[in-house]
Image: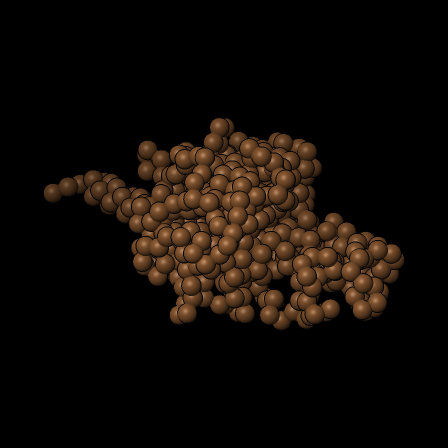
Length: 447
């Protein structure tokens, strides 16, 4: 008969084996619970992006704050604590910031709730005055200028100073598991820095109190807002993993209309612009949003950059830009696109390839409601490319580009000038992805 110590050792080994197996089943590319050679749990706060896991693994890879010492490891639960932990955007000292619970960005340093009226106070702005000043019936089609536009910009700047969090290089921002971690109403700005990780956060309700009217945007004009939940501008080596992005609790369907257009207070969920490069976005949930992800700020953004990998993400209740890609080399694999209308968000298209973008989309799974058409899952300007195989629509392999090109005069090109090699975790069948990703993506999964 085995000794008591031997039986305890055997039980421990079996338990660790079960845990390790669960990791593999849940998708260890990003690590629900990473194990080392001794079968001990790895601290998720110090975890680096795995090798070959998308474009962010290129070159030096992405380690975030893995080298942070104890003096630069913070646990925060208020806006003021988060600002202090982030420090100066120019301080590249490695740091780990653990976010516990939900931080409301629209609060002051004492924790008092701030409203749009607080930001407008002292600027001279009022929506009623703005609408009167720039009514197209009297103002015409020229861009707003003058006292009320200046007041709007000043009020917007006050809000931005409060809700925009500038993330320095070599930083890991991660939600503490089990605490409902997230940032409500805030915008993480990763600008001109390298090596940043954002994990396990619910990023919701990023709202601009002071949208700008642009009568020259489109044929009828548009209201445009200023803040993305996460914005990358000239950033490199960024890993965005296991987060949930949503407009909740206020959806676009509840917005009022002025000048015949929706008063849009939401901008992007994750925008990757201004020459950003080497980015991996994986195992996130994007939901209840319109203009979700912009890659490339314009048709003249930085050639040779904007290399982005999107894999094992769930897009549900997304109107458009999943993503809109310009110029760069974009790899999309093993994503799920549920194009069913949700909370009034009715999808227009999923992927837009324009400005000579080189998109490889493979082994993704689209869920199309009754009456939906595969021809409307893509969009383009006639210069962008989309290639790839193994894409399913309601379980059936479908050539999305052929479907689109058969119905549109501006054809999507069918060749690219690169071949993806950073493909960790690539599954060559998309059949079971809707079931698998339902429980392995978004905030709250990591533990």
